[in-house]
Length: 453
Image (cartoon, rainbow, N blue to C red; front, side):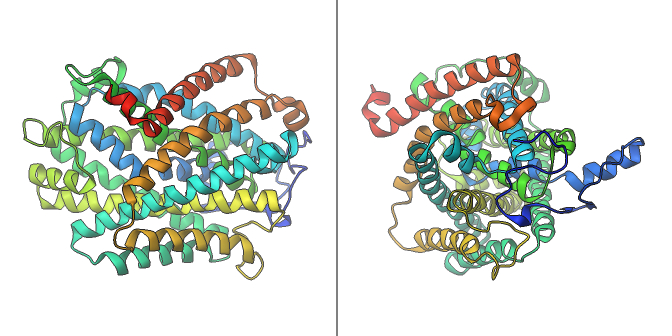
């Protein structure tokens, strides 16, 4: 791969080269002007901002709402420390795919295929496809729960949400999609008024955020599975594939990597603040009530929040759940379309109109429509599908992170942009822990008698 700071050498779709057309500005192709003033650097950052924010806020999706509020309702703020420990893990993983995308111009799936052969390329894409399809089902489950709380009809609401996501992605304008996505990102801030209204104790939150520990009297096996679920919902395989491809599609080159790192940090702040807020206000809403320690689902949380802070708080929670599920469905669906476009050599860019990239958009629309239909069919095994998401995540996450580390140490791929010794040491430890946790999670789902014992 090239060390040129302007144009990656492995671009597979001609639409991946050209001007950077961000939601808040444009950077012309070949722009090498120095950013000597703060105003110029800020203008550049505004044009670059987007990939890190979208992938991180997309990670606080329907599944995350369930996991974080379950932790808060059942164990108070005692599990906040898991979020603090995950901050460097999130950054290291996403920074590596950031470099891979900007330097190579080639998606994650294609790099695995080219460097490690057809078997591993097919394994990564097929596993990702199935996992993402099931994850999108959970996003529509979240949408249906939010609609139910708001008193809106489930079937037309779910169908309308699917059509809205498909329309926003299929506009043929990268900038338009990014602007819509960042509006949804802003919608995630509706969690903050709920937090402020329930005012969880700040001192206790700060202590639990920095001091690891287990809830007193809790079943250790149950708590361990919840910790694994928190890790799984915060560090998900689709994030690696999505961010790398999205950076390529946005036409970000190595020259602007440091700006994209800032964008990533902003996204990490959003995801951690949102997750901490959900844990904390769920803890405050159910403290001292019969519901404490008895999590049911997101509807139960909305009812508890409404009982503690007023009906408006429950409405805001439902809106935030729908908002998160929509941005999650869009990001997860796109990670699939990008990956298949990479390995099959299809045109795969949001800069293209549907008539120019029929297969790319058809894959995306098909995934969303099928997932929405599954959710609205009476008697669908939604609980089994949710367990399937956990199991497949356990299979894919270790292999995805191993390939990520290998690729970032391959000088034939990254040249001088390969990992340093410190990054490799930290990444190796993280991968070992992820493999262990994923093994435990997969075993607990496939053999539930283990956790019961």
